Length: 310
Ligand SMILES: [Zn+2]
Image (cartoon, rainbow, N blue to C red):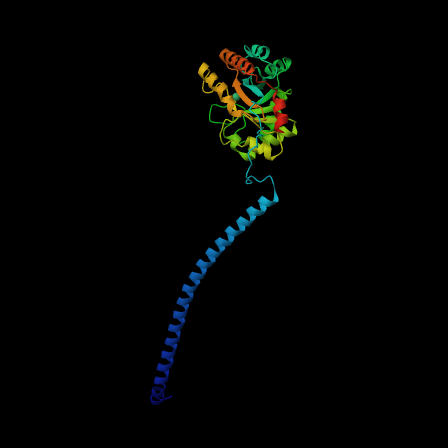
């Protein structure tokens, strides 16, 4: 091919080059557009995925709630106390807490207090077994005073916030073995454990399996022990008054006596807790019992209260 012939092709080559350039420009433009479109799709996908995920987890949660009655999120109904058409005060149940430390006063508490007064005995203490035996000997109902984690100094062996189901069961088995005469249990401290639905379910189920009932000492306003017991069809008992809180003065005792009036017309007995720490607490309790009896009130056994709340 001569130079003349070759020069004839130059415009054609230029034209081809132009077409090629235009095409690749267009191509790169479309690619850019695709990248942008891709990005927005990715974002959309991500957001739709996340909404899908949240929908899914919501569905899971709902089906869990519907599927099983033991799931923790079903709201609890407070125990419905029965209001009678009466101005009378209900019977009174007294529980004395924290037996097991002291042998000296034990016999006096057991001997001098009416048989209706229940003794709540702590496990793993020097006088645990003796307290259980002496209380029974004098006809007092015995409660296992279950140590649970709270805000104060806790017992060495207690149900802690991080105890596993197996650990809880093993502790309860052990406590019951030390106090086989027990008719029920209440909590020592335990302001955090009694707010924990999962743990309280394990404890209440264990007690029910052993024919024992639970009295919520109500050391926390947020304790759900009573409403949980009620929801599971167990007797639902809760402490109404601490006799020795904030102190053991005459004034406090007088205040507690006048506070009984707010339970007028209630069917369920008034549940009162005090402690066994010293002689003053014994004499205060004796004064309290004398006073309420003089007002025509009756002491009753915790078992009667349990039967009413069952
Ligand atoms: Zn206690």
